Length: 347
Image 1 (tube, rainbow, N blue to C red):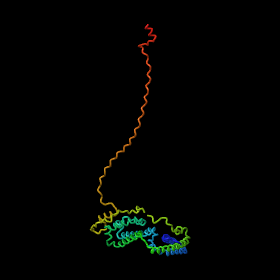
Image 2 (image 1 turned 30 degrees about the vertical axis):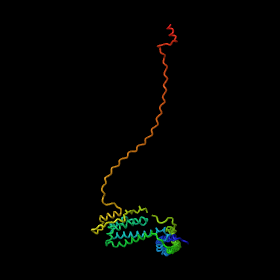
Image 3 (image 1 turned 180 degrees about the horizontal axis):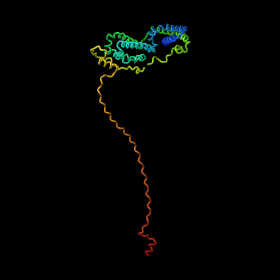
Image 4 (image 1 turned 90 degrees about the vertical axis):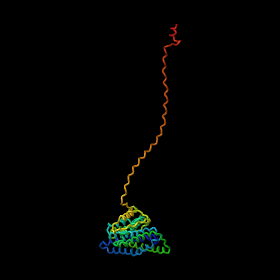
């Protein structure tokens, strides 16, 4: 069976999941009376897988810088990211045990307790949270409190947090392995992948036989699954908005003047509160002077409607011709010469 380096890596990771599923099936059988033969088969399957994958953790640590495994670099970082969050939770638990859950130093150092979200956060969100954590850790109030004798046991945990974060960051640093170092690592990973492929098939058969007396137990256990092909590259990232740890960025060159402290009180002073508020992007505690309301702007004049085009002049009516005047009756003042009556009178 020929395997690529990436396929061998996927088999190593898949063996981790099968190991945990076999352990869950073993607990299921342990609660059933009898089934001694089946329990022995399942125990043998667990032993086969664990013996073959024993060198896997150390080998994965060595092969993570192989160039062909660059696309799974995020998965290496994902495991280290969880270790870093573990140290942060350990630091929070230590301060809580030393002081109390309502201690101001907890609010100053961890204003947002979002540890589960940090385990799934993207690289950019992790870097933003770590930068804010470093700024708050170096603030005058947190430095003063953690320097007290009753907080001495917290200091080693602070070193663990810093070391875990540096190890996580190292996963993203480009490393060029020379061929004489990469070739034996590549061969060792592929050889381990081939051994695990056989061991996983044997364990699957034994687990199916062991779980046969329990209806649907093998199907529901997930032991019938096989390594799936890589449809997506890397791990999916959380809307930075889900974490809710956005912090105001401060310039690195900005110096903070030390304020002399009169007492060693566990409560932050006014200057320390102002410094913590600036680090967390909170609003200043002093109220701002009231600002006179501005006069409402004058309403803009309504835009004039565009002049409608003048209608064409109506055609002048055609003058009506004057009616014909009636004929006048002839005047009686004179008679015509050829009138017979006038002729007789003159005779």
